[in-house]
Image 1 (cartoon, one colour):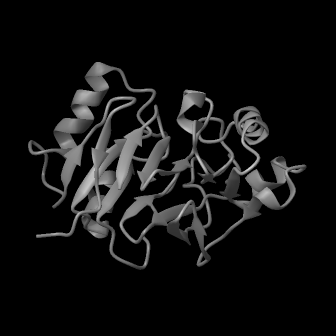
Image 2 (cartoon, rainbow, N blue to C red; image 1 turned 180 degrees about the vertical axis):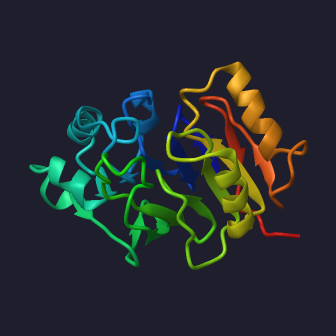
Image 3 (cartoon, rainbow, N blue to C red; image 1 turned 180 degrees about the horizontal axis):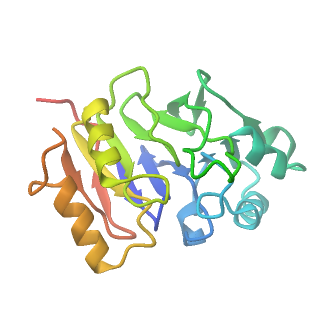
Length: 217
């Protein structure tokens, strides 16, 4: 399958001409949704979910379907059966991809800040997008989309998370607030100059693509 990064936390996955988009939020170019058949949304925060963008895309493409956590699904009322609320343990097919749902809550920020629902999506048993949480799915992950910069995590958390997941490759997402210096620092810790995670670390530029999902050697 082909993975394309679209700014901050959004990615598009393609295979055989079919397109699935995850987390097209307020920091994402709406062009990420061009030609998409399905959208997955991990949680309601603006950098992952744009109601305006999704409603416009649904209007332009009557075949577009959305699967999302319960709080996002409620905000998309009026789209009827085109929106499905999903939670931990559920499985479904979207744009020809097999998707399994893992996780329940956004990572804690502070006791005074309410937590919101957050689900992660495992696509075709190989690609995992955790949203804003360090959820460990109950099955192997080949390619991890790693949220590398957030107010709820540290580099230490990320190193331990990648080690626990044990993917072959980790691709940086959730990096829209990093400047060049921050990007280099994170890459230093998670890449070859760091203490080691057991996974190859990569960062795609916005609009850059890579083929993923090939068998392990």
